[in-house]
Image 1 (cartoon, rainbow, N blue to C red):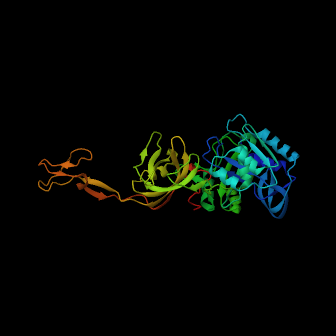
Image 2: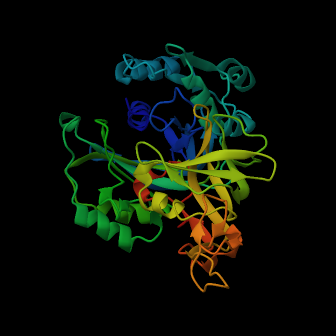
Image 3: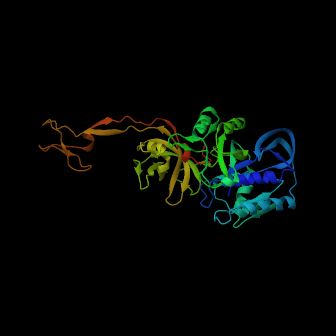
Length: 416
């Protein structure tokens, strides 16, 4: 149904305990074929808080706070039973992709489990064996256990925040009411936020399209600014809100790769030369070939990426670029998340057929790649036609899709 909403219910259920640090919203490998929408998992640390505390949310008018430091609480069978009851109550088990997993542990799993799950396709049982949580339960096929373990194992190298506002339950599934002008105002005034509004498509990226309990979510680098950002947005009544620490916008899923050794369902950054003139296929998607001199691979920019796709149309053979994206198995291609243009090839275009030195007239083409002939019998090669250098519209630097077409984990250029 909604993993982050479940998190708010768990926080409310365990109100007798203190929360230590922000709850964590952790996105995992976006290429896994059986994932739910955002392939997200949530980890919450409960215990006895010490030191400073801060308000990070509100549920039905009651402030929710967490502590900067604290001591953990040993999980008990009673804790486990209460948490399982919430999953039983809230999960949409009729959906074939809903396979929740829950762990309770007082021992943090090795961080390698996170890096495996954000970059690879992993199996449940090896993950579970290494983590060895005190309590665990998997519903249906139980693959959600990979998420719960990996979220708990995450030790941030880079991180962002997201404040998520939730709707009143009576409005779930109905059209959301959010003032577009207020979203634009927030986006322009709170500079530490990102991926708020798609000006090209006039789309509010903070608002989900699914009938889930979320009203909107604002992402940013500074937690304190998200409080102001939330207040600027004018919307229907917010029933609860919560600020998560996340790995969104970090590129944690990307590994440096080679065109010669690409694996489906992973995400890579590869460097090479454009080896073909980009072409548009059915559906409006753009495809071009990338080569490392030994092997080539298709790269695809999908139609919804609009301006990004139009920029891709201007690539030409010989351009040296780096591409980041997920590797699709069928058809085998890199789904481009962003690209960097390192050097641009010199491109020439024919402006006139060769001039016959004897007749002072333009020759005519004999046929494709066969050269030219004059009526007097004189001949010329293809490269003897007159060419001029084309002024390239592209520039050196990074290019990315519009806000509405970016993946959760993809680092926006604003953060670069």
